[in-house]
Each structure stands twice: as structure tokens, then as C-alpha cells.
Image 1 (tube, rainbow, N blue to C red):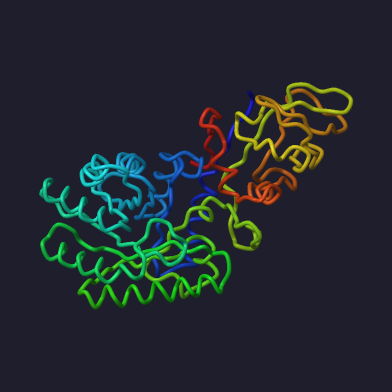
Image 2: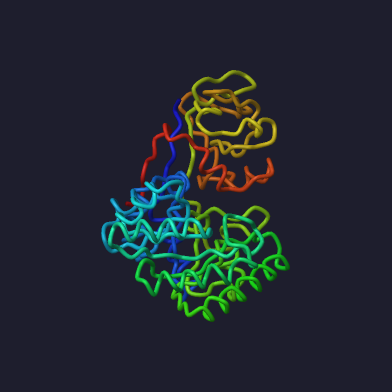
Length: 349
């Protein structure tokens, strides 16, 4: 394997600045799930903090704990998956904000907080139609009423109300927002006063100002990964922060073999569909093997030449989302597939 993933931390910082300027006065929560979308958790968190980011979206408690270890006491860290009571105890110990979209989980977290003699910071999740572990609208009034009781007791502090939306169409998102607005009104009627209302992710945070509320959760755009079927990164004012490259390891008359394959994270379904960047411009990706791949040859190809699988290079190299669109997925899925065994090299530190 000759693969490596170059991560441009200066580009990351520029993207963060672009996102913050776009969504202001809403706060930015930088989502760092899946090892910061494959870019490397610790370097990303450190650079994001230096760039002024205060909120991090960690997905699960384990990642939240790793962010706390890197970011220190001042960061606010939001996690929304807890698989066990041990996870809840760890979340309290790490002082994580927990997303809660289940009545039983709310009670279990309150019990853990009582035993720890702590107050759990909670963001209540309403299911606005995507069906990702939120409370259904018909159960929401009882849920927020119980949350208000637990807050009065001191077991929890209701910091936020949140949800996921599909970002599939404006009409669907408008319907989801209507459900979310009704949930906010019901929470207020129960006596709750959340300070962090958050609904939008990358695409909606840019395209729909009314979806920004107090905070937006942005992952992909901060890494310069555009939405599938959406505007280019350049039109969004973003720069891809990661560049996946490999060396040429063998050359014959028609083909060039490169030291990267499916085990390193290239989807085998890209065979015969994708192009990659070479010193002579884009060339077809003909074969994806386990540990190496075959690319259409170019004049003067030589062992040691560098091929860019995705990311900004010297010419018109494909982006992660370009590749994703060829196989019906999204750019984030291409980014997070890169094996953790592929070295990460950091530029612009």
C-alpha cells in the first residue's frame, strides 16, 4: 500500500470560518463522528477549537469522551447515542450534553444523575418525520411534562430541543419544521426554556435561514464535502480538506497499477465508472483490487507518479461527492470509508 490521506487543516479552518459567517448569529456545532469524517479526530478538534468552535457533535459517548480528552474543560460536547447505563455514567463523568429521544432513556439518565449527584444536560429530540430515535408527536406532551418535572427536581437541565430532517426536498423539510415548531410550543407550555434549538445540518444551514434557530449541526460542509446533487464546493465557498492519493507501483503499455484498493477504502463498485487524477489529467479507474487498483495509462507514466483518488490536486481531480454520485451515495460515505490504516498527513497546521 502506498496510499495516504492528506488533510489540509488550513482548509478546514477556512471552511469553518465560511460556515460560521453564513449561519451567524446561530452557533456552529462541528460534527466529528466517524473519526471526524475520516480526517482524524484529535487534529480536527484542536484546529477547530483554535478557530473558535465551542460546540462539538460527537454522535456517541465514546467519541464524546475522546473529544473531551482533546478539547479540555471549556468545550461543549453533544452526543446522541447511549447504548447502556455505563454509557450514561460515562457521559455524566465527561460532562457531555446528551440528546434524548426516548422516555425510558430520560428516566435512566435522571437516575444516573441522581446517583452521581450531578445534573444531566439534556437536549430533547422530537421525531419530525425521519424516524431517527425521536419522540413521536403524539407522545411529546407527556414527554416534555415529565422533563419539566425532572428539571424542577434538579436531575436534568433541558438545554435544547432538536431533531434531524431529511434535507430531501423543501416540501418535506417544511413539514418537518412545522412539527418542530409545534414541539417547541408544547415544550414552552410545559415550562421548559431551552436555549439551544437545533434542526439544520449542512445543506439546510446554508440554503434555509429559517432553519438555523440557535445552533446548526454541520459536518460535511466544514470538511469541504458538498451535498450530492447540490452546488459545487466552490459555489458554496468551501474547499475539500482531504486528498486521497497513492503512488504508481507498476506500468505497462495500457494500464498503470496504483498502491491502493478496496481494503484501503475505494468502493469496488467504482470500477469502470470513476476517473482519478493523474499527472496527465483524469484517467479511467479500470479495476479495484483488494490492495491495488488499475488505472488507464497515460503517456510517460512512471513508477512513483502520484494519482489522486479524490480531493483537490493540480488539475480537475474528482471530489468525494463526485465519486459518491456515481454509485448513488453521498460524499461523507466515501470519506469515512478510508481505512484507519491509511496514514493521515497534516498540512497547514
